[in-house]
Length: 395
Ligand SMILES: [Ca+2]
Image 1 (tube, protein in one colour):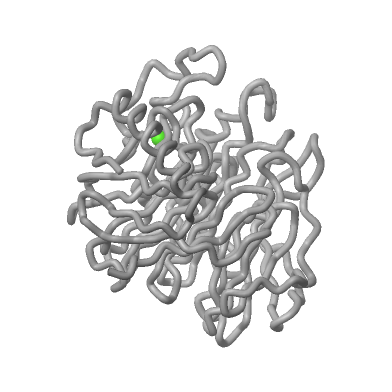
Image 2: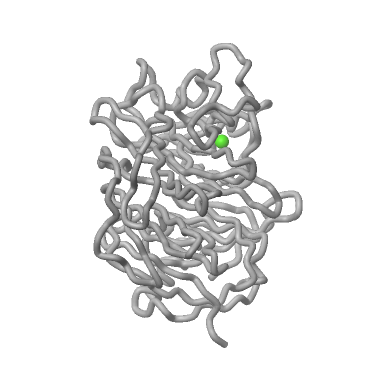
């Protein structure tokens, strides 16, 4: 493991990939082998909890610590006491399972103990016209019942890229919903490249939206009184957020988003702000490597707190506040699909990034969460995907 203290991204990123590749070989031969996190000297090991999940996307815990895991083709699985129930839960809506789309995030209502409401995001539609939907349903222990689609993205888009779609609850019981820009060139939406949706404030695409728990618009959203503006918008100028979390200690909202070629970002989300895509970006066009914008920063646009070039393809994000890894409190943990690692990110009291290091997993990481047992849980994006627990190694 290396320590990324300097910001010479190109050489450090290459070194990181080399080390991650070496570590992943070591991991795959012995998943429970202990590793040492260099800059905090935290001993940890990776313990496989469940195997045989098909492209798992998200994990959520019920109050009794039962885990619900989405599989992208369109199933929700139950894990009780570390055992995967062979029967998927019933009542899951039909999804448009293609490319990046399918059944995606799962989240339980903050008052689940009273209302038993479960929230799902999924792509719906056809190859030529599809969109992300947010639905909620009552979970009776075996099935979802009374499923209601409480929000759907406008406009529709073609193709099977950039759906978002993380759900993050805020303390006032509203939720944030991250929606991607709709896809890469040469796809078009309304006669333009999808990326221009991110700056189109009439569109839900390329946005973080804030909704009440029934899908309606909170009256204190930043643009409810603005002309020609979608009142659901919380922040805009996003390409494709795949990791988002609210830190209950610092009250900050963090999100990771994919760049095109390079230029992946960690952003500190604030109400009403513009995060730049595609007017200011560190990423380049796929294939040609041409500039997307001559600007990496512009007045009035929020700069990322961290840029990853080459791309790590961040997915899943959690703010760690547990007691099991006291050295890691106040750190962010970001999964990486391409890097096949979890980035541990150290922040100062103002939210400035001080340091980061990759924790090699040896497979594409789709989600990373802090569990109710204050350990870290990781989902790997594979046809035989795993749920892995990251726990302190016994000394
Ligand atoms: Ca940005």
